Amino acid sequence: MDSISFINGIVYLDNAATTPCDPRVIDAMHPYWFNNFGNPSSPHILGQLAKQVIEDCRSEINENLHGSGTIICTSGSTESNNLAILSAFKFTKEQLRRRKVLCLSTEHKSIINSVQYYGEHLNIEVIWIPVTPTGIIDMDWLFSELDHSVGAVIVQLANSETGVIQDIRRISEACHQVGAVCVSDITQAIGKIKINIDYLGIDFATFTAHKFYGPKGIGALYVSPRMKVAQLIYGGGQEKGVRPGTENVAGLVGMTTALRLCIEEHDIMTSRVNELRNSLFSVLERVGDIRWNGMGAPLLPSHLNITISGVNAQDLMLRSRNIAFSAGSACNTATNLPSPVLLSMGMTKEEAEQTIRLTIGRFNTEQEIEIVSKILILNINDIRNLK
Image (cartoon, rainbow, N blue to C red):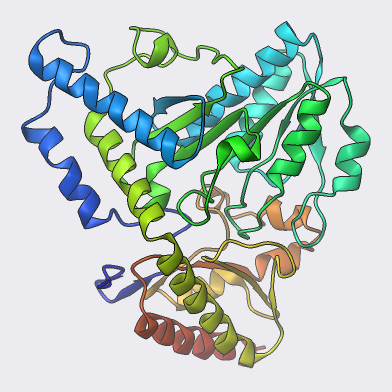
């Protein structure tokens, strides 16, 4: 596949933050902006055609994720996470009559902040689940804390910064044994690994299209058959009455198409992306004193999170302006503070500040990896030689 990630002389290696929209996805969306543009709530033929498209997309997404529950369309993972957390907390308090929730300490900010907010406002105790130095959940700790006083356990399928994959099936089985709800943000994993929601046992799963070559502004919340969604906003009766507002038909078509392409091309693209990522690290490690974070844990094929001794990440980014990469999650970089994820893994502040994230995507090429390797090695050596 031709590269569309080498733009204006910049190599894009920040695919964990967002991905370029696949041209085939754009083509699939096009008719729903100009021809089939009806409001799905309208009774006329254009409205009813749009409504049918929505239901067809909903069914296809569910089928491709192997889920037997309901797909609620949202604006993206942040909204989905808020809906999932609110629903899980209300279920904990009102149905289970419990006052405790466990949440992974390395979650995305949209989970962390939602959990803190609803915990405070619904008077539910939040206990943060620790991780090992590789980023994997400390299972011994989890099983010692998980009992009939816990109403929900919140654990992402894969981490956005390190790419570390958690054993969600094992966690959900333990949750259900004590009657607790399992909530999982699958945003980083979807499109990169095969996902079977029913097998994983997730009660609420959240994701967004722009992480897997779909459009921005569209995401979804998966709800298992045994759960109900708490209403967050109020208006019309769209999305089963829990998420009102005129549906984004073109966006949903784009998300459905993007997911279908990821599944159809999974084996080939996963192998290729993994090879490019490994090739990049094998060259970079020659400069010495570089650690691959998460090594030894199950990892997404796309992520390369490395700590470069003696090299400040922000300095390296400033010197490498023709490479788009990050020093952590895109949602954390505005604060210019060390990554909470890396600190939770036991890193010192200095180590966290020497860590960068490079994420390979569908449209990256071997030539780009060679270019990036040369630029980064040159700049790493320049920074080290100044000290």
